[in-house]
Image 1: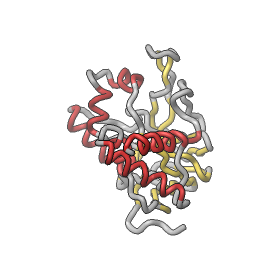
Image 2 (image 1 turned 90 degrees about the vertical axis):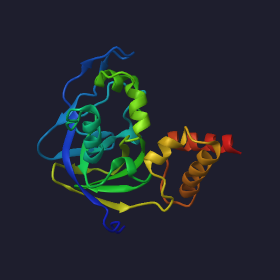
Image 3 (image 1 turned 90 degrees about the horizontal axis):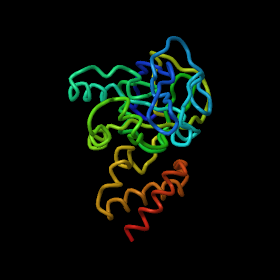
Image 4 (image 1 turned 30 degrees about the vertical axis):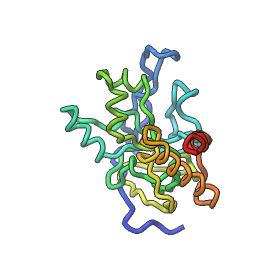
Length: 226
C-alpha cells in the first residue's frame, strides 16, 4: 500500500486514562480523564496499553479502540470557549496536527509509528462528555459544530509516541468523511440515502470494512430514503 500524496501529519500528544472519576451516569465512574504521557506507547487491538473505558457497553471495543482529535479543531474550540483545549480534554488518545480527524474518510488507514489504524466512524457526543465539560447544551454545541474527531480499529499493533509522523496509507474512493457521515443523520432523506449507499457500495467493492454500527445505520437510512 502506497501513502496518499501530501496526506500526512504529526502526533502532538498521546493520552490515556489518568484516573477514574466519579460520574452521575449509570456506571458511576468515567475514564474520560485522558492526559498526555511520555515515551513510546504500545497499541493493542483494544487500544493503548494501560488505557481503559469504564462504560464498555457504549465505549471502547475493537471498533473504537483509539480516538483521535486534531489540533486544528481544538484551536477552533479554544476560540469559541475562550480557553485552551489541552490534549486529552475531549477524552482523545491522539492529538494530531496536519491531518484533520473530523475530515478523515471512513475506512482511511493511518500509519502512526509502527501501528496501522483504520477509521471506523465519528465520535458522537454523550451525557458523560457533557458532564465532563460542564457547559450548557454541550451535546448540541458539539453536534452542530461537527468537529467530532474519529475512532479507529487497529489493523496492525505497534508502538507510537509524540513526534511520530502520521501517514495516510490508504484512502477509499467513496470520499465520505466522518463529518459527512455524522451530518447525514439530520439531512434530507435523499442525502442520507446517497451517503449511506456510497459507504455500502464501497464496502461491497472491497475498499474497506464498515463497522457493524455504521453498516446497520447505513442500511436503515437507505431504506428510509427509498
